[in-house]
Image (cartoon, rainbow, N blue to C red):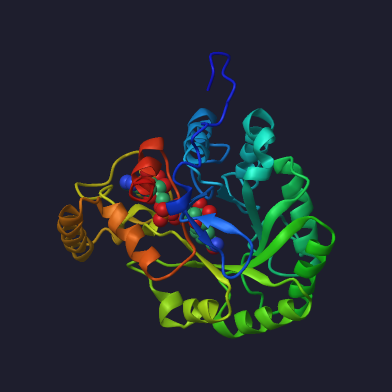
Length: 318
Ligand code: NDP
């Protein structure tokens, strides 16, 4: 940032490019091994300057991928509004260096057209997202979850048409079970809008995409895989080793319950800590490395401070 408060990206932001990027499946897209998620810490309730500093730090270190969804906040939509403000204030000159995703699939607005997987919902939601983020297009648009009530062809054709309309460059799906994932891959390939990426929850405490064969399928089909909540929302860090800090997600948010902090978890964390010390790594770094060793494209971290993000990317910048 210069003395007028104007952001100017670091000149050496791609100094570690050789180590930082993975190819997404067999596509033309490279994604950073660590990407930044806006689910928490970027809403209307969060201090804007802190959110802003985290994104500057990210981009200054080659983290080109920011992940959003229509309902990230709180309140819903406000993380996208933060992105819009950042776009206008700081990132407009760098639009072509950024890979921005958003999603629709969970509850967003009242009534029958603000949830799940209809064409009506997906199309309207993306238009809203573009307005909030002050973007002409997103790089990646996801169906955020599989809708068992809507014909799968309707959801998938909406994704195809969104690309044809130029509102998204690529499409992805998130949280879909394996069988619909297989159908999606085939349907989209036939229409020349190949499925770029699958977004699923994967971390040392939650290995479902591995156990259910989703990660293997993505690898076989050359579809990228991005792991969300790689630190189990902070459980796989030193955050809760000595209690529940007042400013932590566990203390503030209903998404992470205090009962998750079990004796078994603490024992596991101490083991990870010892293992990490042998490698010169923190618990968080051990947890992120484990995921990357599974062969995923990227780990999608959250961070409530620049220090956390710095810790999470340190091992990839050596
Ligand atoms: P993480 O598992 O990375 O958890 C992030 C939280 O962990 C931070 O807010 C912070 O908690 C704590 N933390 C992070 N780094 C450190 C560190 N180095 N040391 C100590 N504590 C740390 O990811 P999220 O659960 O936030 O998810 C990441 C992204 O994944 C989301 O923003 C979103 O983009 C995506 N996502 C997608 C979903 C989907 O359905 N597709 C669902 C959920 C997430 P604290 O705030 O307490 O400081």
